[in-house]
Length: 461
Ligand code: HEC
Ligand code: HEC
Image 1 (spheres, rainbow, N blue to C red):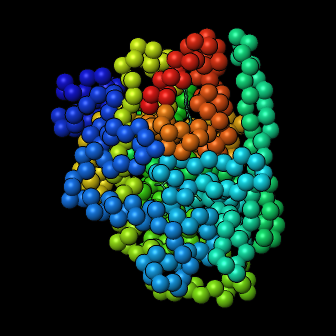
Image 2: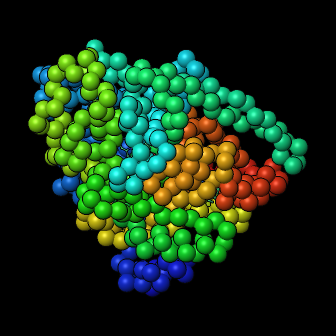
Image 3: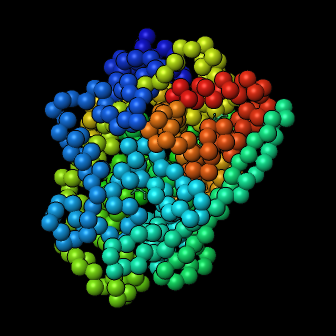
């Protein structure tokens, strides 16, 4: 029980039996015993500090699959061919560079190199998700194998929006505007959702947070004006519905499904979970596509053993430790974070339960992810207008903030939010609306000194 000191009451009640097992190594240890002390460009790439040595080969091979550049079939490298015909990038790591996060193009001339655009039509698919577009499916693939035209290209330009804090200090925001050039026919009425690749450290811990703990947070929030909502989404492994945890709208329930979905949707690799090529019925009639070798073959591109290790890899990346968490100014920033209601959604502490696949390294850990894994209405400015299972067009999952201060060291940029429109932490806060408007207003109304303390705290995560 002593170990539960400092926990929100509700979590203590929920996890009385587990308190005895979990050790809280302290706030510095964002990922509990998985926490790694790395601040270099490899801050998101280290195996969990407590990873059993016997499991290193699986982690290492998973890392290799994550970094593999897939090639067109048939090739001499049988294990790593089957790219496309449509794809966005040839490897996982080209979007999740160094296991970190992507960024949007800076100008209309730049291609989307580490983000993608999901699409659909109004209505629902047969599994309750977004209704795929009859020509373009659920994602625009802006690249294709030799001899096949990509689905199209989406460019972005920015409109600057100037604003002032109540104390007179000036700020600028930029709003993205997208243009579509589609190669297989117009798509009137298409809904779209631009999304940058999130960093992938600590995800096994998020997978191990008990559903009951997440729902308890939603109940707590209901009385505070920031009603978080769980997303219940299609589970491709059970055929039923499960709590969504991954993706910007918590639109995917498990890492295995997320990874197999990425393999198919982003690289064009079939797997045991998604064995059919990513081509719509209408596209199949296209001559260039029909002649592509390897289509409709019996074997899958991403072997099941490879998907196993890839998934293990994404489940066991450690979380970088906080820096300077005892610095009095940073502690002050942390107090402000909770006083103005940021921590209502970016919940600092959870205790993981038993990981569903029994991975002991991420089980029963006291962690500090700064997320509730719930959906929140963030207002019309951030809305994409594209529903995703229970998520409306203006709802987004609270992203975890652990490691956010190291994005610059890893990815050499500081862009944030689902579409990368925020150029830094301050802009990310200023875009908060809807249920987070109160916290944003409190931020704007603080003194510049207090705002700086809050930002310093965020950089320490
Ligand atoms: C074209 C860029 C791109 C490529 C290539 C890509 N991803 Fe992603 N990844 C994304 C985006 C964008 C998201 C968020 C998806 C969403 O919100 O639906 C994401 C989400 C994820 C997540 C969940 C992260 C979270 O915090 O919820 C994991 C895990 C992941 N990808 C793994 C992979 C793996 C494994 C591969 C290779 C098989 C891969 N990705 C290839 C862009 C990419
Ligand atoms: C009502 C819930 C809620 C509150 C309150 C809230 N946030 Fe957020 N926060 C979110 C959601 C949801 C997003 C993702 C929005 C998007 O990408 O469009 C987000 C995104 C962020 C991001 C960018 C993260 C990333 O990975 O891109 C930062 C930084 C952040 N919030 C900090 C704060 C701070 C600081 C406060 C207090 C001033 C705060 N948030 C209050 C829900 C909330």
